[in-house]
Image 1 (cartoon, rainbow over the protein chains, first blue to last red):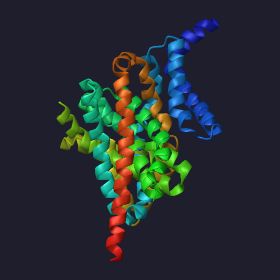
Image 2: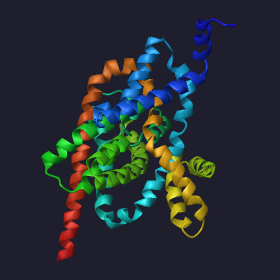
Image 3: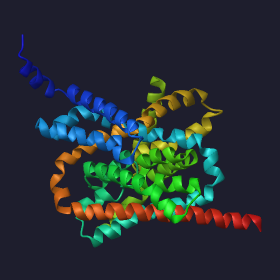
Image 4: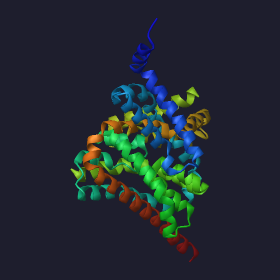
Amino acid sequence: MHDPVELWVYLSAAPLVWLTLTVCTWLVATEASIRMGRHPLANPVLTSVLMLSAALWLFEVPYERFFAGAQFVHFLLGPATVAIAVPLFRQWNEVRRVLLPMGAALAVGSVVAVGSVLLLGHALGLSHEVLLSFLPKSATAGVAMAISEGLGGDPSLTAVLVILTGIVGALVDTPLMNAMGITDYAARGFAVGLTSHGIGTARAYDVDLTAGLFAGIAMALNAIATSILVPIAARLAA
Amino acid sequence: MIRGIAALLLFQLFGESLVFLSGLPVPGPVVGLVLLVVALQGSRTLVPALQAPVEQVADGLLTNLGLLFVPAGVGIVSLSSVLGEQGGAIAVVLVLSAIVTLAVTVWTFVLTRRLLAGAGTR
């Protein structure tokens, strides 16, 4: 027989409890997001991170112990990145129809996404490590973290900046596009997918089906473009 | 399902190996992504066994893509010193960069489309 207090000591040291908590928190956060009409501020990634961070702080659990369990979810980022090939493949005919506008928007947009961070970050005196972690912020998290890690950035900081960029883009997108008078939903979707990856894509699908489709394509293409551009920008930053 | 998982892992493995051998600065999974698109294009005639299981697993992963960001995002708890010192500047760069990227991208798309339409009707 064991004391219930001992059970907590036993469980909190094992990976299972943190893995379970991560998955269940996600379910709660997703449900909450749906009930709030998928408002960008109720983004389930944001609310999950906040709830879990609060739990770690409350129970004084070091991040390393949490990650020992959560890493099994984290590992799936690699296969999930490969999986982006499927929507890209399905929408290949759409891609071919507007190949030139997309190619131009991708070339200009991906350079601006990385270049603006380089210039503004320099001007505002961000440290070198923060800058390296910041450059890939418009790429989907798995790709951005791999880029950042490969260049000596901090993948955790990158993940946080990627998520925040997603939320900011999703919040700003509709008012900005309306103010600019853009009525082409393919263009609107492409811009938000390129800027704000999966979070922007989810937002685009809420607004318009065509926008969502093009956002998904932009996310996949910008993952590739960013991974080529950021090592070049990092050399300029050094 | 296992076939789909095996395919995704294999393509990631191909990607990682290619990156390691070639020294390309691109993450392995991105190379895996490109290889998988090429393989799926070819699979209509070559390997019809690949498509359905890969699509099934990929859809499952991508509909819950957000969950996979969570473990890394919680890493914010160990970053409080960085965010304390440079938080203000980080916020400014983040918001401005997002707005500029959105605006420039959408304009390039619309302008190119208009130019092409103009060239087409002439």
